[in-house]
Image (cartoon, rainbow, N blue to C red; front, top):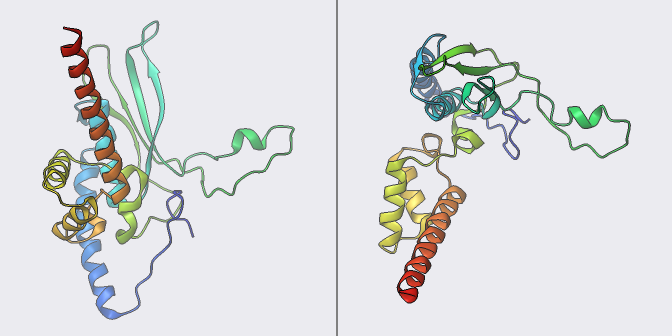
Length: 225
């Protein structure tokens, strides 16, 4: 069963009393985090920027067990200045809705999107602060299990602290795989860590390419001069 509208996620159950007790403790802790995040998402709450609102909603989605995607946006009339922005549950809409209405026969991949209406909308007056304009909390699907939430697409973010650890440890000769394993242990489980090996490799690949480009530009500068 696909619980969060991301691909390749399987539902995980618990088979013994110890696991059930651990799960109950996790639920209590998660509920506390959810309550704290929800209090910052109520209508009228101020957010610093569009990016901060997105990160906040992604953190909320991680705590609840759903993935987030960026939705519609609106501009002030006659300008390219953003006036409103929405972030939605990834189960919103129907993946093949447009094609399914077409008068042609095409192969449609199965989709588990459930037209979920959960979303966050932020708005602002011209030159004013960003505030929460709408916060729909209700979902029409199940949430992903806590020990699988680190696989949510919108949870795969690398914090500044994680970037620093990655770069320093890899530069010291430690493999990316071992660095990620170290981070998982420090976070007391992969469910508490947004970073996965693929994300780590992608980030280090971008860093490597930037450094290569910077070196080439410096060499070009000195050769030309």
